[in-house]
Length: 289
Image (cartoon, rainbow, N blue to C red; front, top):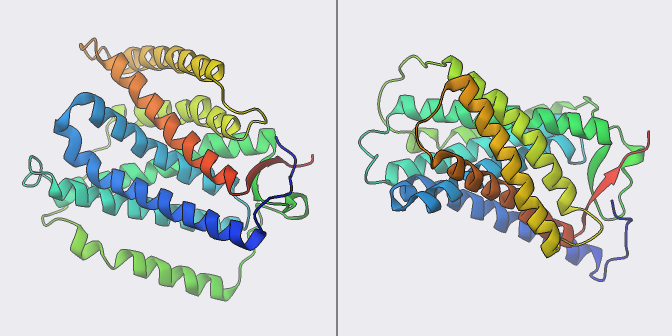
């Protein structure tokens, strides 16, 4: 990981640039969430790439929850809040998709919310492990993470009041966003648990190297990019083999190619925003033992 360097831009202006980039990245991902259900029928390459970007968005939320500085009492609720807005944006996309408008019911929206929020939680597991094993911590500028206890649980009364206010504020648009209908009993079959387990392992072998690559000392070169394409192809082959053994063959020879494209889009959705934030002063530090 890189040593702190003296920024050419003043700290206050750099902070403004960083927060502006964060807002642009968040708005961009929300736009992708809205467009993805609409673009499902526009072509397999476009739809698979957009789904990969949506998965990468969930991984970015997990990266922030697991590795960002500050109190864990703040980070975890904010990660759920960001997952909630991701859910809202995706529902808006489904309700605007002409081919699925009359078929997307309230039960579908609730099941989608469970998958997204569950994905945010599952995606954090390997990142928390990586943070503990490699002692990683995301910091800004010259901030020294050695003097803080990142996993402390102390909080004050106003933290709880402010958090309650944010939750109420976030749930307020639900009545306008959610479609009409009844909530049917959700069916969580064994295949869903298999998929969540595979996703957790894939996040360990895809997302964690993406975080390291975004903050590596040397810039990403053509050779590194080519090696990464081969790395993703090898891991996608293993992932596909595990799913075939667990769930059976899908019977479509294009499925491995679609999975490879999805994984590449997922990696791009993690690396590119982190590279942008790195340029605004974000760093990945290794905590002392």
